[in-house]
Image (cartoon, rainbow, N blue to C red; front, side, top):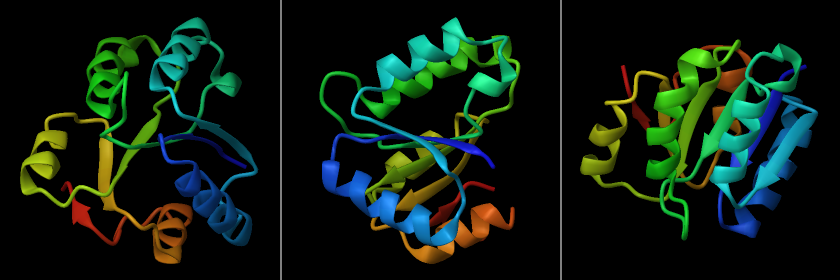
Length: 138
């Protein structure tokens, strides 16, 4: 079973994802946080411990204090030191093409998913077919 980290400042989004994940069985090991900086610190501290690292990160872009953009920039700096290839999905309410295009500059971002999350998103991730509702980065 895979490990998932949800980084989003909206507690309602956390509840929706939690509900959807229990229905989809994508992951039973889920961490919810409002602070991406904590996740980055954790990744750096555990960079050689494959079993401690998540498989997926769902990242919101617009959050107070430490934005998703801040997260992506720092993750880009540390990702080559990580012993696991972590897949990052942007999950945002932003539908601006500028945001979608900007995320294409990060090669480790798998897809840009617009909120609200639908069941098909989890089905596609679970099935490893990334025909995700929202903008494709390919």
